[in-house]
Image 1 (tube, one colour):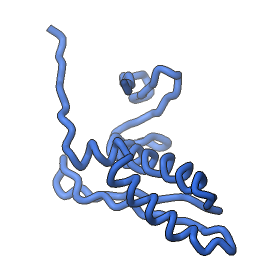
Image 2 (cartoon, one colour; image 1 turned 30 degrees about the vertical axis):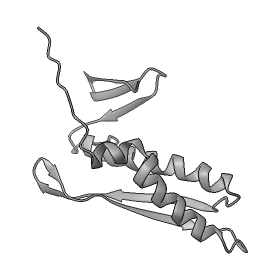
Image 3 (cartoon, one colour; image 1 turned 60 degrees about the vertical axis):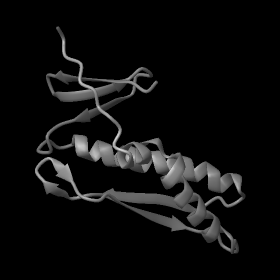
Length: 132
C-alpha cells in the first residue's frame, strides 16, 4: 500500500511518507515549493523514468543522459488538459540499437507498467473519508 500524510504547518503544507521523506507544497505563489499539480506531474514523470532506466540498462543500453519534461495546461480552473511527457536522452556512442530499445521500453512502460500513468488514464476512484 502506498501512503503519505499531508498536513498544514506554520510554513505551508508538507507531505511525508513512512520513510521520512518530505515534500513542501503550496498554492504556487511561494518560492521553493511544489504545487499539487506539479507534484502530480512529477509523480507521472518519476514513475516512468525510474522504470525506463533500469529496463533499458538491463537490455544492455545504458543511456548517457535520461531526463524528461512533463507538462500540462489547465483547460479550466480545476481541470487539466492532456499531459505531455517529453524525453531528453543522449544515446551511447556506437550503440546503434539503443534508440530502438529505449523507444520500445518507454512506450511499454507508459502504457503498461507505470502505475501513475494507468491511474490517470483509467480514472482511479478517489474515496473521501471524513471524521464522524
